[in-house]
Image: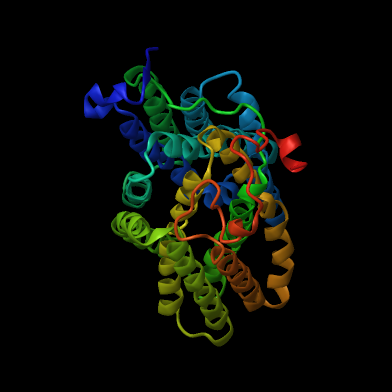
Length: 422
């Protein structure tokens, strides 16, 4: 396939440019992933006869590739990032397509592992290419539009399931095959239709851990912990505490997605105007109040409408997390973007390995305590966000940077071993 620099790609038709490829993949991924997610609980209960232990193992297996996303660094030694992006997307699609062929615990765990590898490797490389291909001045706005594109595709997937499942008496195999093959075909077509784009800076092909990125690492860890609490327990509360039926949950998801389609571009504009520091401070302050309100809703029964409203607002606030990407883009050595994306994804998933199971026991005795703990975590993130400078850049990564001794340019180590000894 033809290789082309980013500067030369400006001469291509708009539909073949790098940003278009990012939009195509952003829309293709949710077709498979959202469909798999929407049908998962019904499929494993109705077809595979899962119990609580089985579903726990499934989610543990699903998160392992996220924790091991650092393996991307080894893979990009063998192939270009763009190739890996599309191969991972194709793997996600094909694994989703054959999900219904393996209605047993072992089969579903195997397929889940494969689809999760595709999803997490796609997400890691996708973040890397976004920050490499989109210039810093336009990044917040473009990331907002990419988030909106993914939300729109997810909305379409959910909408089609709602409209066609009973109307056409569909089965799991038909829906999984249709969604999975659609994603895989789009990925295959992208191999043919788009050139191989050459990023302006060659990426480091080994693990990078730099001391000056410590605040970014810390914020990634806290973000992963908070997200696990939301993903696992916020929706569970809607069913357990307020008796939401399947169609109620689907309707709530669709309202959330419609809201994100509208709001995500506005979030990008807000980050571009007010900066990462203010955007993240606003996000974390809002999340503290939201999680405390979740606890109040569960404990005092403040009403199902308030619970649903909090769920939608919660998703909007999480959209502000794109400011964390652009913060790193501004402070990073351009050659560090790919390896650091892999490291950050692993850091983000550390909590996913143990937190849901551990907090499940807390949920049994004090459900509101789970949300109070989430508010404490959000408060910690708020404190960390205060360390982001108004104008982050290399050498000015945190407000504490002025206290650091001045070092000559090029003196910072480039790999994990000397960096840790810095």
